[in-house]
Length: 288
Image 1 (tube, one colour):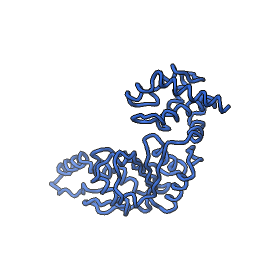
Image 2: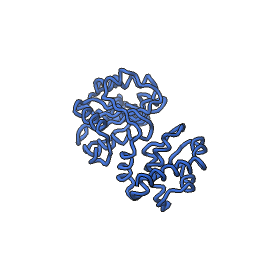
Image 3: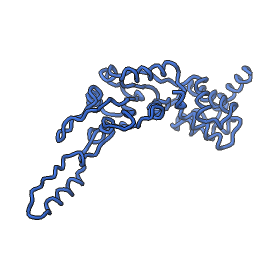
Image 4: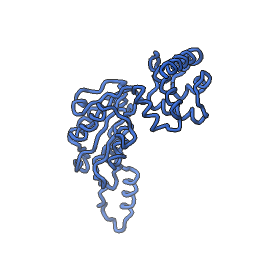
């Protein structure tokens, strides 16, 4: 994980290691922006595998996730065959792999020259429960059946990473087939280490200020607390503004990089931002 510039606590690194060794899907739950999706990207990059991503959403079905027929190509093939000389019968099989549009799940089962790919099934909680039940069948045998062709099985199972923001509960039957890990908001030390890698231009002083303010924000009653992704974005935004020292004015002007709901911004902006900033600066002075 460190080789892929990912700062992981030992429990998470152990979960990733065991998932790989046991050949079981890795199921990651946690708030949005805590680094779940990034784990799949790091695995693909460090292992030298292809990354196949299925982004889940409400209404996701087999034709979008697995396969569908290229109807326009099939119609063209039929027209060309009908116009052939001597009234020849149509012999071309339009239900062949040549006319198949392969979606992420089917692509993940195919042969890849650099080994089985990393299959990222992102935000499964956004998909409908019927699709979740279908996915359970796919992950059990790593095969899909196309009525016109037959069953397509993976030569070797892909490395599967499933993520969920827990907007709804995922069925126990699917969780039982996976190695489970919960990703929480990082501690101050871990978040600081992440910023040193992802936003090194921020420098040590700004790094500590950013982390301190974000950690304080997460203790507030907000609709959506900032994740590590927002912390990194904020650090980048501050360096673009040549900020060296946080001030209430700077915080107020850049809150949109941290908070994504107007009610949260309105709650923090102004006196509350000044209070939080004063507290972390006083704490920093006391420690130093």
